Length: 576
Image: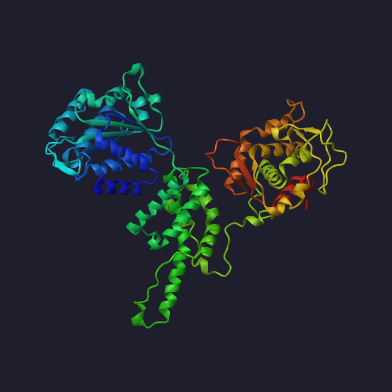
């Protein structure tokens, strides 16, 4: 491959991180033989794939000295083109580069009153006329190491149909002709369907359509998504964008800080969305406020440097903008992390625009120079009276208590702390020593979850007496263990608060119903968004239950236990 082709591939890959293989496949097909029917399936980000196709075929439509043939490219949306005439006119006008103008009567191509939108027959004749009207090209192709000019090479026509699955609802009669467009029109044309569903879901029956050339787009990984967010910084830096009078928010010197910022945005928001467009929207809303303390400090330093100089020398003083120190970067991350979640909740459903949200959430001036910096939300004080847990529902408070016990107690102690014997309550230990008389072969049974079913009691747990778990930090636990402990807490401490339920006659039946409700899992998701629970496994991991860690300290758990009248110390393996 010559240097021009290598440069084209490198530029396209740099513009679209994560699409290197896809771009290489499209360029290879275009340079050799572009199949008449291609089906591209992207289940996660079809909008980005559409922009990649625009970039590839947009570059190839420009006359250059490379091995690729000339291209005429049109992209239409099956949602916007909901009638056959709209589809025909959109394709022909875009392929011909024709602009529909109100001053000229909104005439379609070719502008002489001739119509190509009456039927599929006239559309095929329009494609043929457009192909014949295209002049000869002085394009060049490669033959070995030499370039041979081709004077009469006709361009390849490419039609990309975005959201192709909507053709089955709006224009089902066009699916078969579009898949056989090259055969029926007898011109060099390729039809590309881009969809989030499989071809088998929209494929016409009776085998009337040929099998397409399949291209599957793999989902973005974490690094590709972060690189795409960072690539948006380069575009904004080139455009020298400002916000509300704040200049240099996309200064090239701030690129290292933005890379850490993009990683922070992904780590917080990826639990809810992986769409790079959504993440970029949230990042653009929070970035002006995130970088404002750095710019304020730079402006202060520049003012102090100029204050010691004469008026003639002040204009010559210019301190270069530099990224903040590591300590300042970590402080900015801690300070603005809660606001990222707030931005996600407001911007993802588009309750407010990004610009309006950014204006309402701008930090105070000179934030880094304050002696006592205010904290937006101190998670270590959640146990105090004035905290965000005061207004939580009762079930959410029980979930937090269960999460605290799951993160504090060893998993093997659950049966001893929460289990029941043959109808009688087992007394919990308080001092770390096992109950006397408990044999090695004893079995405890309890409902709610397999975590507490038929687990043999152990004689000694001296392994866990070395370092108390509450001092070594919260330990991760699976979701089913959390649900099991929640059921045990509800059964022992919430019976008196329940409404009458005569339909449930068996012990534990009401609790089993309560912990299986959807609202319990919705409450767990809400607590995760509040950062009182932390999910330690990525959402895309399918093997095994999701893992969590408790995010509240002992003081907060103790306050919740007092409010719910739960004997917290009796339920801890190493009580305080």
